Image 1: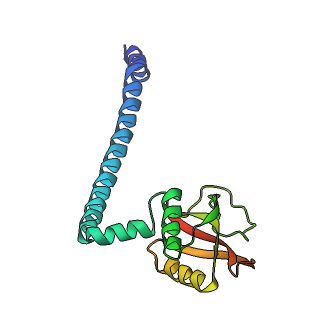
Image 2: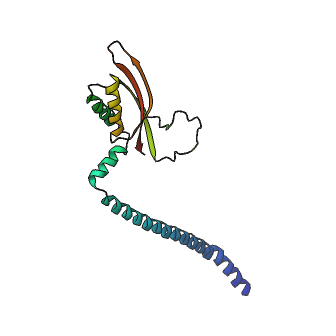
Image 3: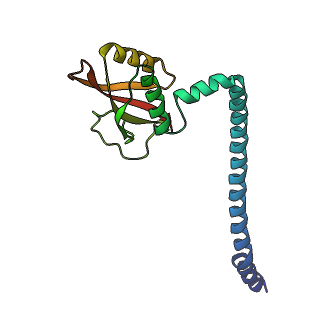
Length: 178
């Protein structure tokens, strides 16, 4: 009789109890993951509330200026229109516009990095030419420097023509948030 009870206990353990015990351990692990996820969600909610309150402290006008300086997207057309409007104040129009949105922040970079890009911003290169006098071009560059859009002039070439004006070829780089 004791041997039968021992065999029945072993059979019951491996047939039912062990399976239920393993399922219970998996449920406990899942429950711990859920608790951890809830804790992370609570922390993220607190951070979101702090960021929302900080965002509300910024005046709408200032927020629009920040958005114009470093937009959330590439906005190629808006950039070209802004630059053309600045050029229009001096009676010139931008021509031969070329956009290179390869994302490289410097042209001299030769090292390739494997893996995702850790930068939180992207870059775009814009090339164009204008035909004007030297004085108007300097004024144009000053206005471009004072504009709300963040731009870096990376290349500048010029050639004179028979009209007493210069053909300026400008390459600039601007930034946007990813």
